[in-house]
Length: 108
Image (tube, rainbow, N blue to C red):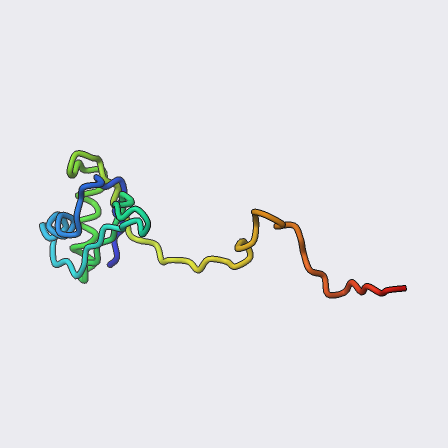
């Protein structure tokens, strides 16, 4: 089961997250999400636990618990949804400039 953890301390590491959840069972992976531009934690992460019963127990026990000086929020991770390309050009310079192929121009 994939578990989403939010409100993590910015100093929390992958190893810290894995150690916390390992108290409740086997942990396949633990990952704190890092901002690609700043290199700093975004304050959330994911833990993968292969045993669903252990994962559910960890969620129940750790949700709203204090960890590393902050009260964390722990839930089942929702599947990632695909982003729509419709909003790709929704703002900025000339955002309302459309190209309509039905318009024809002549030199008359």
